[in-house]
Image (tube, rainbow, N blue to C red):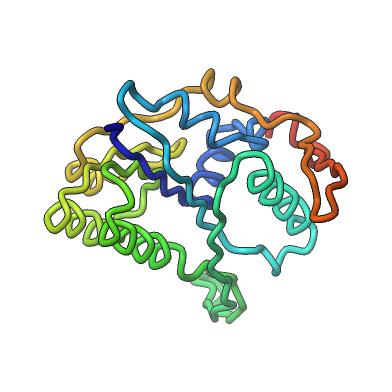
Length: 210
């Protein structure tokens, strides 16, 4: 019987690392193709869960984000789980003025909740965790101890957590060649509810280096 693999991906952790690395031209990324390259013999990819939040506070970026999420769902069968953004009061350390700053909420809680629920349900044998958020250490430790779940940690570009790396069974990162070779088609074609072919085009500018 194949070893069942479930992927849990922190979307913003990966996106911001990708941009910090200067790899923005690979944003149109097909995560299913990327993970299928890494699945070992004797393993089966059961699910990919992509955790993010709509950037409603950035109206120029929101349509591009929505386009990418729809493409992932249509082409790659990725399940998207969304948190929220909250506007928090912040004080400038220099001028002491107060201002509003958006803060992403619930992503780490959503990942931990889904991970533990899936482990309890016996939905997977091994987790591929694409994240560098040490807040997930308690959930990972509990799943390993209570359910015997195996963990492979994959660092997003320019992101790393020593605490997570010390806890998991295996640890590695993606290469630029892997990202380059696993891009979504442009356009992504899919059938709508009426059976008509629809096309989702890569956002303008995403093919360029950033």
